[in-house]
Image (cartoon, rainbow, N blue to C red; front, side, top):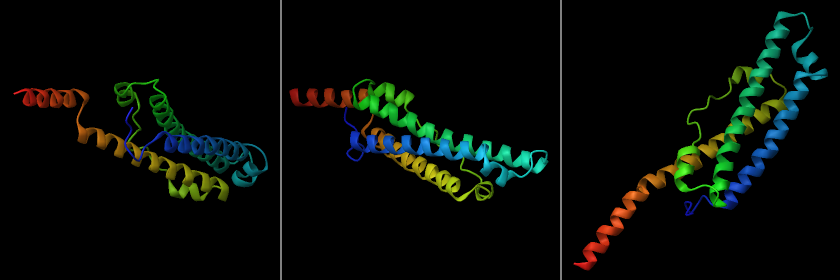
Length: 164
C-alpha cells in the first residue's frame, strides 16, 4: 500500500473532511436559494419568464457544483478504501479515476448568484483542482515506476543476473 510520499492517508482524510463540509454547505445555500426569500429576491415574480430562467440557472449551477464535489468525494473514498486495505492497487487504478476535464462553472452565471453561493462555487472548483493535481501526481508516479508486472520482470532479471 505504498502511496506516493506526498499522498498519504492524512492528506486524503483532510481533503475528505473538507469535501464533506463543503458538500453540506453547498446543499444548504442552494436549497435556500431555490426556496424562500432569497429565491424571490433573486428571480422576481413567479409568472415571469426571466424568473423561470433564473431558477433553472440556479438549479443547473447547484447540480454542477454538487456533482463536482461528489466526484471529489468518490475519488477520496476510493483512496481511503485503498489505504484501509479494502481495495487493491489494481482496483484503485481501474475504478479510482477522476474525470479529467469536469466543466468549470460559467463565470457570468456565477456572478448572478449571491456572494455566499459564489464563494462555494469557487471553493468547489479549487477543491476539484487540488484533487486533480493529486490524481495527476499519483498516476504519474505509478507510470514512472512501471506496472507491477514490469517491476516483477525487473526483479527477476536482476535475480538472474546476480545468479550468473
